[in-house]
Every structure is written in C-alpha cells, then in structure tokens.
Length: 259
Image (cartoon, rainbow, N blue to C red; front, side, top):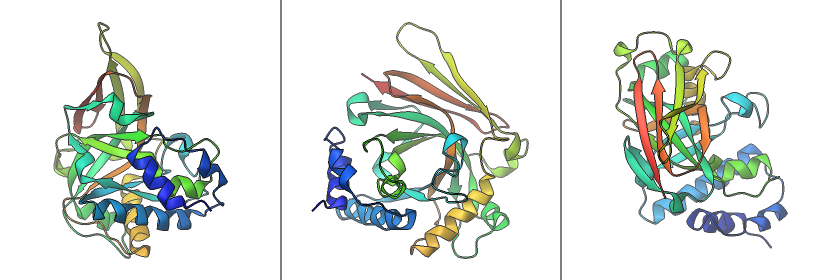
C-alpha cells in the first residue's frame, strides 16, 4: 500500500524520482493534507533543519480559491533554504519549477489565535521584497489535499532588505511588482508587471488568516519568522539573473540561477 508521507519525503530529497505512484493516493481534504505536511516538517526538523517561517497559499491570480472559496492553506519555509538577495542557486538543485515575486513580512511579535488584520499589522517588524522558489514534484492531476501535503510546492525563498512600515509610501493595495530576467548576452527584460488591486488578497487579512489557521494545527507565527503571502510575477527556472522590483518604497530583490 502506498505510504504517502514516505513517498513525499523521497521526492523532497530527490525531486527527479518518478512521482507517478502518488496518482494512486486517495483523495485528501485540505485539512488532511495539512496534517501530512506538518509530519513532513517534523521529518525535516529531525534531520537538523530549522523552521524559518511560513507561506499562505491560494491568495493570488489563477490560484485564488483553487481549493475552495476562502480556503487558504499554509506551507513551511526551511532555514537552510531562506537565502538573502543576491544568492546563487544551482539549476541542478531545483529540478522543475519557477521563480515568483512575493511580498514577505518579518514578524516582531507572536500572532496566533483570534488574530485580526489590525493585530497582524502591529505584529510585524517590517516588509521585504522576496522571491519564492517553487519546485514541481507532483504528477499532474493530484488532489488538492496532496498539493497541500507537498508543502504547496515550496523549495525556499530569497529575501531582500527589511523595510519598516513607516517607510512605505502608500497603502499596500497600491503596490505594483515587476519581474525582470537576464540570460546570456541579452540585456535585462521585463517578464511581468503585476498590480495588487484585483490580483491578490489584502496582505494583513492574509496574515491574520494564516495565524488563525496555524493555531488550529498547533503552531503560531513567531518573532523573526519570514512570511510570504502570494505570487505576483512568475517565470520557469532557467539559468540567468532575476530581479524583483517592488514599488511604494519596498525595494528590490535579486537571485541568480546558475547552469
């Protein structure tokens, strides 16, 4: 009988393994997938890894409400895969997937049960431009719950400088994010420019939803954790330099994918 957790763990260690056995997995609800995901996190922690933060999924673009109206599952971010702007990542480590612009929050305080958007706003140390590095490990056609159990495709994040809220020049609803790429001898090219309005959930509402959902599963947002909140521009993995430019004073972030 298929052991889903063992199969997921093997894919996280070796993403080029054949994922086809997971097509035989039973249908999982988002909550069942969340429980499996936390077991996956425990395996990482048992190997000496550390938890660096969390992501909230299904908040933006075509993925919004993909698991059901208002369903916002979470994923975890590992310390060893939390990289600073300018980092280089070997293409061979990533297998298949892509780079996504995401706004990152850095926590200053704990945030858990009965969190509200206002409480979330007061609990952060600041904001940072970031990339999420997503890795495609599952076969097409997997259930929604299995996608959650696979940590919502997260491989890691790349984070720029933290900006205090007082330095932000406009409401986050006015944020626009541009993704640029440069490969070989070609100059830097704009890949995608995406405005917040009409594209992504309110960021502080997302933080409060995340905190409340984590509480249901025995966890909490904690000081110094990094929280990513939904994709803007995205592009598949390819060797080259990638830059995210965030308006309203948030700044930029860079990552290099090496051959």
